[in-house]
Length: 524
Image (tube, rainbow, N blue to C red; front, side, top):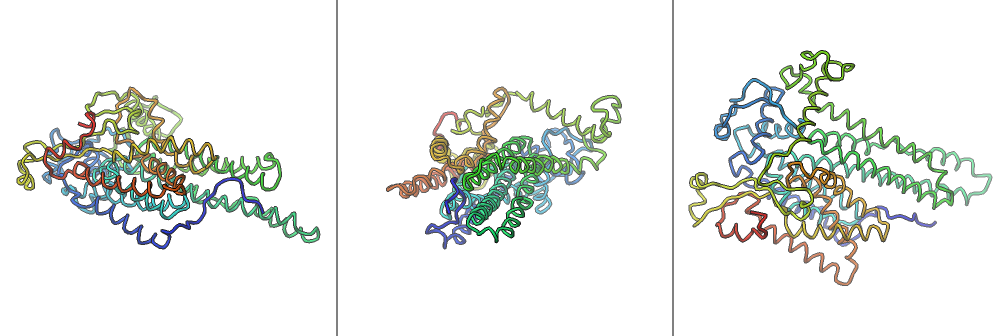
């Protein structure tokens, strides 16, 4: 029987297969060590932690994000965590990420800096484990899976986001999980397509008198089972939108991706059976409708459910707006939903009009090369004077630079171009899959050149930067020098991560060391 004319997942057969459980444990263990060690350093609210940690705490305590007195950070950092005001605050991001931060506060207490960041660290480690599993399935290689996990484990942007209580880490986690669910759905769907192809071949080879039972099996198999993995992806994408609205770009993009995968499956079936594709258009359209229903309404309902505390807590911001404005808004909606929609219109106005200058703002066009990373923390003289480990240094410096491993990101930029080329030349679905998250997580930001944006937003599509690198590795691994080059590049990336680790984790170092890491003037 002829093989289906498109690449599909193959079980891993490389030499690392027996070492996969051990390798996975080592890579995930390394990621955990990097992320959890000295997680409470610095014991200060760093960058936008000043919003999200306090929002998470009051969300836990009151059911809504409350206002705080001015200049409260020092008192909060010292353990005075109950000085919040009774009035709700206007916040511009949905609640899921803050609820996850709140889980860490529930475990460790809001007075402990490590508890602020606990959920981020846990999610960062889980993302490394998922990365190994997803890359293994995507490329059919245990070794490539381990490399993908290792690269995510040691990248600076991933490390910083895992050790700081911001929202973008959670967005990355949910969209990566949704991609993994859709990849699993694709694997099962193509197994169904191959089953149909086998039945069609058997039908042609079966004597006429024995075709009745085979025809019954064919009709029974023509409709695939309910695709639970795709439904799970809808839930995960709804949670992603519940962290930040930019998750909607992934919802739209992944919807198109799974529909495209179905199209290639039915085209392969048409080729295999010798029938025109129009015979299967009806089946494909039904699956397209099923994909829409599994993703968009499910994500929307999931997103709505994430606002449960806003709906049930009378003091939430804007919850009673409809009662005070009886003729305004979408009048045919129930008052509570009308208030909720109005709140969203206020948030939309904020996001579309955000153009406040910031010293570390960075336009999306520069993100792939990490031209202007965000400085999250710089220890001033007053802080360093009271930090014991600085006593042994001549000119002590402590910094947190949200900078990706420069070698990994610059190599990733080249790998994107290589993936576009190889994917087009070989019509390889893995190339499109490797580029998908970059398309949905980066390209939309190019439409907002006047909006205040930051390089650390790129954590959302970092896994796909790594996928493109791994895809390039798979394309060169059978070349005479391909494996040696792959090994050399991985070693260089790990070595650079070791070198840059202090400025990702606020480790006290000499000022001259910090200066040696500022390769570009735009990094300062």
